[in-house]
Length: 222
Image 1: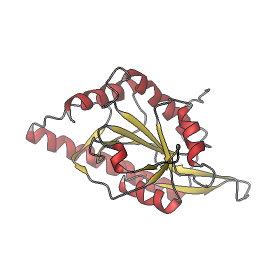
Image 2: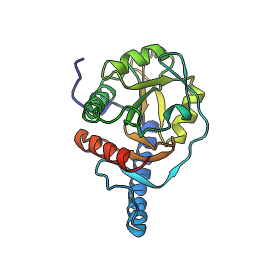
Image 3: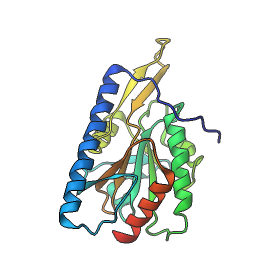
């Protein structure tokens, strides 16, 4: 699948403000986590590509619909480190670029045991156009092991909010109701094997470092 070079999509002013706030929050998390881990000699391995939270954050209950029609709940994600990416299938730039990069990381950790191997979860924030099946077809075009899901907007908003992610509908230039884009957080959220929010990874992504960090976390923290 051809992937265009990465570039920033146009955003509404409100969405841009929200994304800046999310980025600043991630920066504060990095500062806090560095102080926390330095102070207690944590057994968590050092990572290069992501910011680990001082303490993993439990998520409220959620239920998304997977591409095979089954529900995706926290129980489905337990036992693996997971990278969550929020996007949509009509995305012209950030989404295909990021999924292609993550596919490269998935190939690098393919030799790890399937029972504990890190996973990637792609969640579409555009349920109006992206059915669960279409979301899966899109994600699997980059890597067949990628989990894919979506849900009605209220459930998506609650799920995204619990991960400190944002998304919103942005009207297109034509004014046609069907001509719109989705402004969304471009970073990744790291979930630990208990399906808790354990950290974040911001753009630009370093595929080699992400693959190495996820492999190290998998081997060290179960």
